[in-house]
Length: 214
Image 1 (cartoon, rainbow, N blue to C red):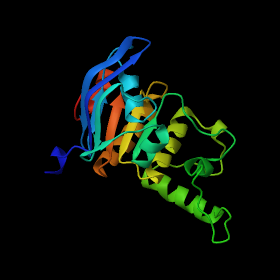
Image 2: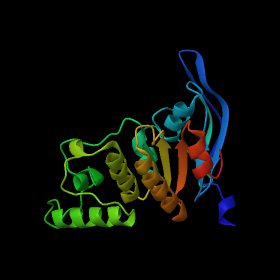
Image 3: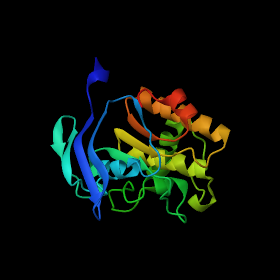
Image 4: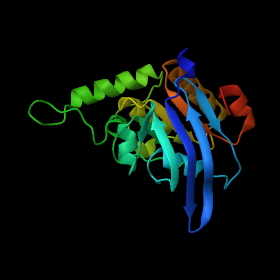
């Protein structure tokens, strides 16, 4: 039974800032192919937990296990290499790069001559977005995209690095109802593919519609 295997295990996680406990003895586990909702009021420590998960913060105490192996992330790059991707409320696209360039920013396919392989870049970007059922103009600059479209680009970027864990921090807060429906369709598709999803939201009706565990 695949669902019983945890991909991520956090035990007894503690984190303080200037003497204030943000996290105290937190346990959290995540399974492949599930949407696991994180719920709590402002100041409950949701974002701090996510930042520990993604290597932005290092815990003061506790252990993190990925596929049963203990890990220590000293920065966000290490957690990305381990297959953890986060989409924060403040989106992080390069405004002057186009959709395809943003998906592969810093990891552009290279020709044998050492130049960027533009044809491959655009065809791979097209494949990724098509697999998500998303239709975007690959040559459009990120600054001209809606918030929902920017999220789709970030999700495609996470998939392009084979992220096994996708963390979404209040992803629906500035979306229209139609955009939320589209996002949920993509989240369900990712879940079917076996991606583990951490979904932070304070909208209970969304969680009942989407989450496997809360």
